[in-house]
Length: 401
Image 1 (tube, one colour):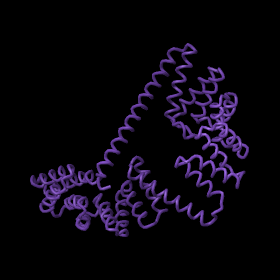
Image 2 (cartoon, helix red, strand yellow):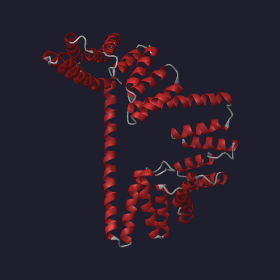
Image 3 (cartoon, helix red, strand yellow):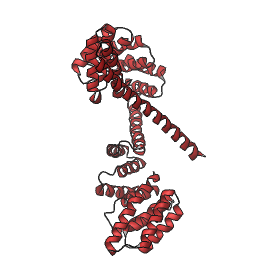
Image 4 (cartoon, one colour):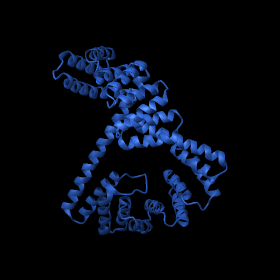
């Protein structure tokens, strides 16, 4: 987490130069030089050099809060936590509204296991900067350390809301929610160790661990104890589908619809399984009902288009694939198997083929160009993802040595 320090240093430097100019009305060449040297050394990871430069800046500008703040950042990264805390406190005395000072004071207190001081400082930071995702993350981390798991999930959810792509935030948020789940399951077992819910929870855990045979067994145990419970047959059907046991999946989706005839997710999945089992008439009937009830479901339009192709209904297929394209960005998904980008890309491919069969040359060319553009984007994304995995693996190996 302290790898973030360097980026905050640059903010401190900008504030310091502005504050000094306001005080003196004249630039101080030596001060500017020490700030520049400290910043460069910090970015290069030369902490001793950075500390020397920023110490000199404190000597040159002892009443400027940002000077103390910058030196505090270096001391914190050096592990000199007490000294860093003192510097952050000095900065806040000089300038109580200084952004970032309470954040790093809180981090320093957390590292000393002084969670009360940490929480107070981090709360002050969020009052000064209500959109500071990192401050909310550290509040959540501190709450986890004190055992307040429910509060931690709320804080980390807020952090993820503010910065949904931050890996650190996502890690701590996932850990918090995992702890809540574990706590709930343990309590559930204490209350009623023979409950069918225990088997359902175990089945879901086995699915995540890719232990599908054991997941099937637990699903069956739950169904035996609670045969009319909505959702259980669908969960079992999903596992069979993952195992490519399509006939068993089809049976369980049918069983689910007997219990809950309004389940659009089971209706959709049964339609797709029927299509994969070469039953386009049954698939078209089910999927037509799904798109009637949920016209924004791009996946259902796409799968219904596939069924119409198998039935030889070219115009109806074009209509469904066109609807899939139109709804792909705002679609409600009934399955984890296809993302909306997959649906969009494959819909364009199908349209290109169908337009060509219908001798609609220009429309076929336009659809094919859209397909190729999306395919290139997907290929680029896969390559980037693979390279990122290799880079993270190499970094992990380096840090382990």
